Amino acid sequence: MPCSLCETRKEKRFCPAVHDRICPQCCGEQREVTLDCPSDCVYLQQAREHEKPGSSHAREMTEQDRESLFPNVNIEEAFLYQQENLLLGISFALAKSARADRNLRDGDLIGALASLGKTYETLVQSGLHYDAGAPNPPQQAIIDEIKAMLREYREVEQKNRGFSALRDADILKGIAFIARMAHGRTNGRPKSRAYIEFLFQQFQEKVGGKEEQANRIIVP
Image (cartoon, rainbow, N blue to C red; front, top):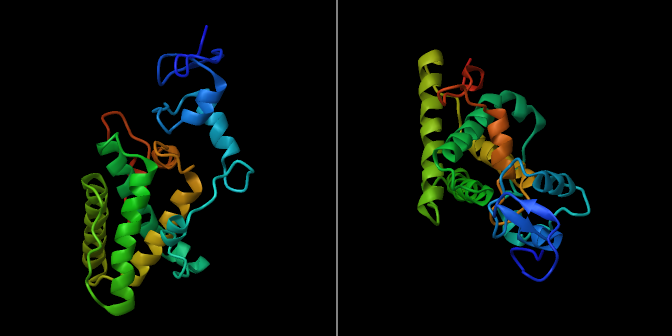
C-alpha cells in the first residue's frame, strides 16, 4: 500500500498524527513540521534521542536563536543556587501557560521569553521601562503569566522579609537561563513540543488538574 501522505512510496509505519500508515521519509520530513505528533509516538521519541544537543542530528542555531539566548548576560553558577525559586517560578509559569493553551509550541514559549528578556535587558542596561511586547496574543499571554508570577514572588518576599530583594538584573538572568534551557530541549521544528513535554514532567498534575504542592514557589 502507498504512503497516505506522498501516495508514492510504500507505507511502513503507522502514524498516530494522521491515523494512517506512512513511509519513513514522510515521517522524518513532516514530523513536527506539518504533523502534530503525540508525545507517546515511538518514532518521535527515537528522533528526540538523536536530536539531543551534541548529536550529529542536532539542528544548527540561527542568528536569531543566538540573540534570544542573551549572549551578553553572564550567569554565575552561584546564581543558580541563590535564585532557584525564581527559576522554578518562571518554569512553572511556562508550564501553566502550556496547560492552559494546548495549541502552544516550544517556539511560542521561546518567543515569549525572548520578548520579555529584551524588556528587562533594556531596563537593566539603561533604566528605561520599554515594553518589547510580543508578536502575537498567545505569546503575550505567556508573558502576562510570567509577570503575574513575578508580582506574586515579590509580594511573598515583602510579606516574609519586610522587603523584596528580587532585582531586575536577577529576573533578566533567570529569563536568559530558562531561554537557554528551552533551546537545549527543543528541536526547532515548527510544531515541536519537546520542551513543553519536559516542563510537564517537572510540574506534574494531580487528579483534578492541580500541580504538585512541592513545585509551588517558596520564598524563605
